[in-house]
Image 1 (cartoon, rainbow, N blue to C red):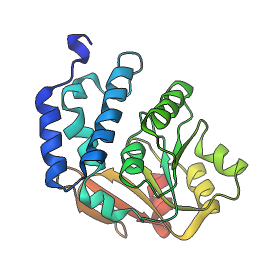
Image 2: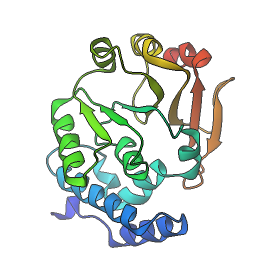
Image 3: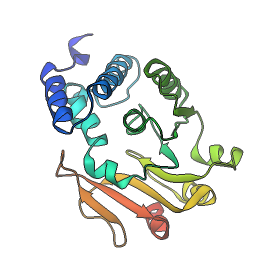
Image 4: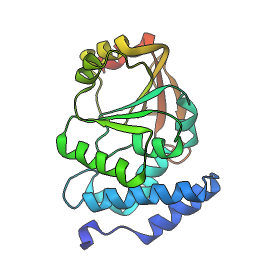
Length: 214
């Protein structure tokens, strides 16, 4: 791995110390490290994260996706969608942490979807599947899917996506995303302990139209 893509030993050590302090089991930490290795290897061929984040990937990205405020906001049962999964954040870390929950990684870009498939195979994520299409295409072709929560990290929700999700959502379905520490009225929010400049935002169904207008 060239210097441009070289990861940081201090980031690896800081993440392990942080994860152990959060009482994450050693086997789970090893799986998370396996995912980090796959992503950083793929980064040499596909731009999954900013190159400036490579040396801080674990604490900048992985830890954020495992922050207790984020995990607490996501229902532990039912189908979880990671919409616009990209390189698998936050869906793959969540699937590793919750092996009993069904996780669907929705990613329409074919190269990224192929990478996600490889991650699921290599990491043994039997609770997870990849859908290489848009959210609208998925839910239109699979009307039996019932979604209890949808997470997103770096996408903009639009009206078509909201309409599609409404048709598949359970009565208590939530959209959970990352954003600023001051969410809109009616939206739940909690500052991330690992990054006080960011917050997890919890959008119940009555607020979804507002989300689509942002």
